[in-house]
Image (tube, rainbow, N blue to C red; front, side, top):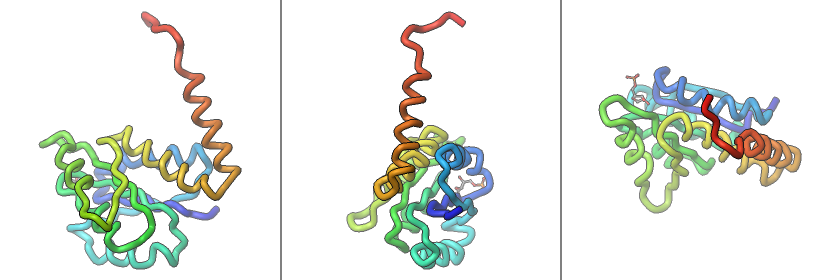
Length: 161
Ligand code: RP5
């Protein structure tokens, strides 16, 4: 299977959050790789990843980090492959630190920033799917089906159970 999506994260501790993106990609039959790439702890790895992203066939990068979350922005500086940023929830500042670190990019180097935490990671998977579906009609149908199934799973009335 092709692996058009790269899921990268600053630390092993981000994986429980970023796994939500991977789960969505699995559900939609999209290939991906997952790597730990830290802006601060492994800057050379970040540089190499960004430098080779296009030549390795990556179409979308999902980047999650927490705290001083420089990974998505630095990756966006290094490659034209679209970067979707996921602010990981932190204990000290609940992820607002991550959100602001990822969101406020200077003109010229955009990062599509998702919500804080696991909802943001799942939505990053869906955003990646939507981007890839532009040029893949089979995937577009799977995304439509996924959305319909989600809507169908929402009850019309609340329950006491
Ligand atoms: C960031 O620091 C990572 O993205 C992670 O969210 C945070 C804490 O990392 P650990 O100390 O748990 O490795 O670089």
